Image 1 (cartoon, one colour):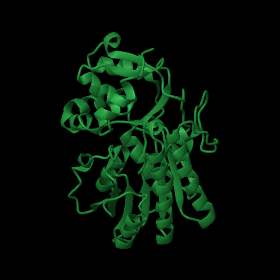
Image 2 (cartoon, one colour):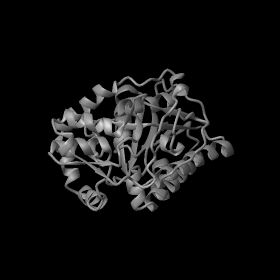
Image 3 (cartoon, one colour):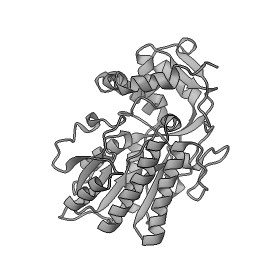
Image 4 (spheres, one colour):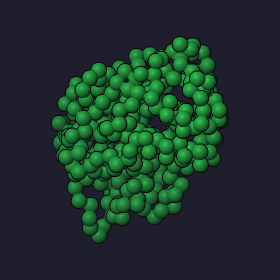
Length: 346
């Protein structure tokens, strides 16, 4: 796909005030001068206008407050602009929250994806990109998941994302819609809402507070920096094939306990006094691993070294306390109490 030319194209990015979405929008505004971005975001707990403060006044950026599951709002967005591309980041994303209350995940990840697909189909967009997750493949005891691996989600979150993915594939098969799915591995970096393990542990350790490590901590994830993830999505959008799925793995597998030890060290704390092993998450997958050969064939590859990227991420949270402290003193505080206060130590 080539967007070069005198007339700007319009990309609708949903969930752009979130973690990965904001990195993607910032990249597009900086590197694609012929693209206008409309950001549709419901501004729920994990969205933060501060994530895009540096582009909020840009002439090629506009923001619309709204829920992708709201047909009226989505129809209005499509009626006011000739949208060429849709990139759907909007999602409920945290597994622990899906265990506490799965309904919101079904509404956004399944119904919301359907509403977007219908609007995009009628508007005859040139490309629809569904941003998904490696968790739809379920636990991977050995080897790595390819794009043809069966879906085996084991949490309400993963099941809702899998449901959205299947709708996208159905719209390609039934209507010939130009759709693509990306499935990324665990992502880290600046601007991540502090309920995930890396920003939660960093901010707790900065404040000299203990961190809750699930079970034995031997759960393994493949990590990718948010900037590499955003570049992968952009590469697939511009060079991928319709109806295809592309895994975006960081190639940096680490056990949670190894990451915890490194964060404790980077923050100048003690593992013995600051790490609290707590009862494991229900249905916690032990291992994820992605085979990204297909995306790499498009010319994409992650550039960030994980160990260096982790140190840079710690430095960012140290430098930007004004970004995360208001978050942890608001809705998050009640969630944290509900999630961890009664979780026994192991």
